[in-house]
Length: 518
Image (cartoon, rainbow, N blue to C red; front, side):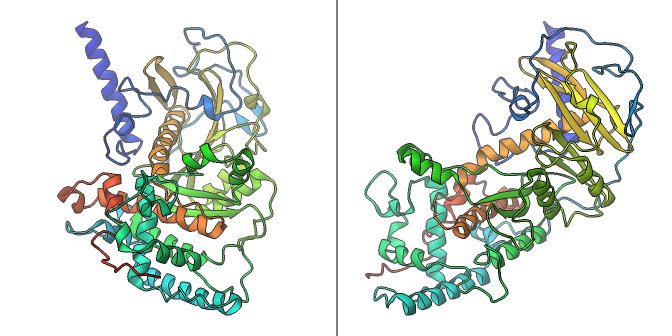
């Protein structure tokens, strides 16, 4: 019994050592709960539910009989294959070395221990951005009333009112109410602590005229012109305030829908709601969860980048990836990608820019041009769980790994001969190439981040696309602000959870506004 205990402890320590070497934080938001502290990639607790992660994300799953043992003639877990060359791909494996990362990870400026939640938030949305919202909102209200008639209940909004307005909106990410107007109701979602800061009528007036850009520029043809200046400023703020780690992920973050809306709307309304007119892509640091780059793709019409009308999804996603990684050239970063982005041509192009990649492949979703067909076909003979085979072309490795199904990975970031291990609560140790372990670890961390990230979206659901994008990016900014707070001396002084941090962005005792009677 004691020997088994020592073996389990040794196994756990080895897993944690590899976990740290993969540059992944073990703390997303630092909150209590079943999913907040355990390692999601190695089952160090009985609550792990990540056993089927890869199976749920690959369409090439093969259900076969599991047979114990392993074949000889290669590293542990490998499948021997006859030497062959296929369009430059060879069974001969060689070591590759990735140059050291040319950046340091972390905040670019140290915030004092006295910094507040608002101080961190205003790193991304400073006073001049809020002043611009005030100016543009008043300009739009004037233009609107000149066209449709005067609004006797309207008076120009002030900076203090605009901050309170934003505070009311962000409060919905904590209260999770079905409508921001519930704040003034007498029901369950009412909020007596902030409702006195502004009357509901005044709030609705500001909401009616709220704008980031009131007038279309004569040379502006892209659909996000009403928010593009704000997005540009936000991107610059993300880059200036934080330097991500070497390992980063390109993906579409989970956008949580309002559960109250979904349970009460008709089927027709639900279908209409799901047809979002844009997709949101991000480049995210896997050591901290900080989102370093945001890209919004409009599904209809031509964007300013000229890719708005592309119908071929692999080609479209490849161009989205290039947009997200345009600032990484020459830094030796490692990018993890899903099947829709992974392709040989993209990875080769990135390698020329000193950007290294590791991505999951799918015959249905990926551009498999240039890849050997023998590696994409499922073997006819049953395979052992954890077995793998690899072919190389230059520094690029194509890995086929079996775990309740065949999973394929393309990478130039990890040596194919280096072995890793995935530890599952039920299955025990599953051998795999190091690239597979790294991919599972980083992507599982992002999934874990998404589980919490989506809980703190602003719940306001406007109909206009630019407004939807605005509130989503505001939500991202607040999450990024919390990550910076967690890495500062202010967190050591007062340790707030993500919910407590969001509470301190509400307009309570910060903007003591008189109730305006309209």
